[in-house]
Length: 375
Image (cartoon, rainbow, N blue to C red; front, side, top):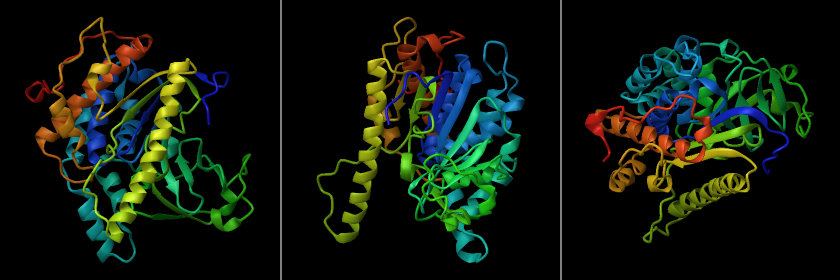
């Protein structure tokens, strides 16, 4: 649907895409720079998918500890957010969870991942413990209804079956559903009570009670890997960070049936993603929304950032980072530092070039990890 300039509220919305641990680390760099610029502490809404939800989930539960200053900057960001996420991304989560699910008939691989989030990131906090502002929204996909299922403090649900007001799920459950990549970690089944749902406009499946007994959920990227729909038209400024896998152009693509099926799925997902990107960029161009979009394969030269020079980046290094795996497995020191540096550099250039009015705390950029500079 188009952005409605008359319906947008004041404030800044940020969307963090999926993309496994690669996305977590890239978005850590993004959040790092937004914190320095005084943007992070003034966000009105943060929508996330999959790997983006891992970063957002920790940010949400640690938000009270960040003690933002008057200029929107937290001096505790590196301790409270960067360090625990880097430690988490140095572990093999997906393989361990799959094996756990395979040998435990009472717990799926996705549920094992949720337990990892509880034990290692402290995401056992209830959604009701999260701050009112910013609004954290974790996006999953409802396999039964084919649309986005959202978890947040005020509600959980989708527009076809209705909403659960003030849901009691913990953050780990929300993040696990958002990051349950099929078929390995998905689906996650949640047993719920039909009477907990309230009808909303457009809930065409509300009267079919089975949709409100058991939720079959998977990675939010199956429906919207940008997490864009949740911020679409809601706020005056929309920032979008995309760490998803760029579409693989392959002249030697196989023609065997399994390869064809996978390729057809990739094309369908890529088309949906491309349409969302084009609509967003067109809305920026028409002046219907303020904002900036950047991706893991962005050419940083597209963002002049003229007042203060952007960080120098070698395009060959960017190409390597854009090709890194999107699994939840161990990322080495160099991979972590370079992904964080790249998220920092490209978001800095994009925000200062496209939305300089968002910068509340001007500060020249500097590599978070100088030993792993991308120049």
